[in-house]
Length: 392
Image 1 (cartoon, rainbow, N blue to C red):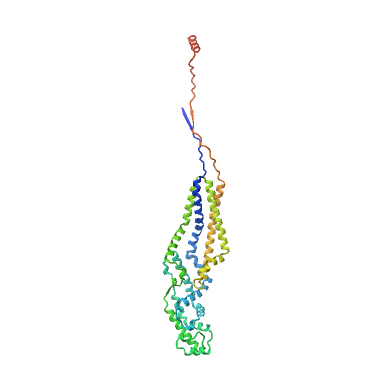
Image 2: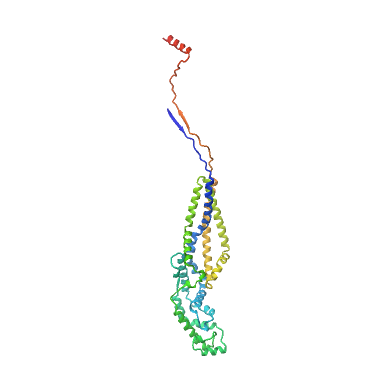
């Protein structure tokens, strides 16, 4: 006997249950902000917080031309002319404009690079806050060597002295006795000499480096607690792409029982989010100047006069590069999501069918031998006996 066993194909129902949807919706809600923020991680880390992105900006003529007035503002208001100063030097705006012509261009460029590098080192946890210092040895040397020309130029910017003020100037025995005006030519050389000596002495007393922390307004300084929370947020920010991938994997795993729904759901999620990001980034790029002005005008105005304009220019260039990267990343993810949507569209859905019962078919080999009939009735028995007698 041979046995042949046939099994029917069992097809399970692939529908997603109500309980699973209770997990799918929260996962989707978490993926949306995580994906949006993840698009900014690479551009921010590779562009905004990378010193290499600033080399071209710091060598830009527009940036270099805006820095001398800023440096002059700091030197006059916060370093050289602090406390009681001679009346003749009270015209600080005049002195600021004169000094800008005597700053070494090479030092200005190096100072900007040093300032940017140390600031980025701080926000990247490479240096303590109190270490943001600028070397000014070359600046000191230039100011000392050009003290008298600076003094001459400054005196020429003052208003001409009256006859009474000229008498006071002629009787002056020190710089503190001169009035705030330009004396006659005979007295002008003496005044320039006094101012030059004063400027040279003040400059010589300066250290070879300045700590910029003391020049930053208290409202804009980061305290220890703020920096602690910044460190945590920055750490989480760096992990966002991995968190987003994990959330998408969990979402796909939850939807695994129906591949068509899984591809369509995740594909549409990626398409919608990235499409919104592309439109949003393009809109900001079009009106970038107005956008940055609304956000940074107030905080930048609290900084050193003129420095806010420099920061605004640099911020504009960096933000523009970051947004271009965001658009590029969003476009790649958009097309990946579109592929998933199209794959779901052309995926055939298997219809659920009842499980077929186990069928057993038994094959019995055919017995070709003659079948023996056993008599059962009286007539059959008699007929059988007659056959035997006649044959015998």
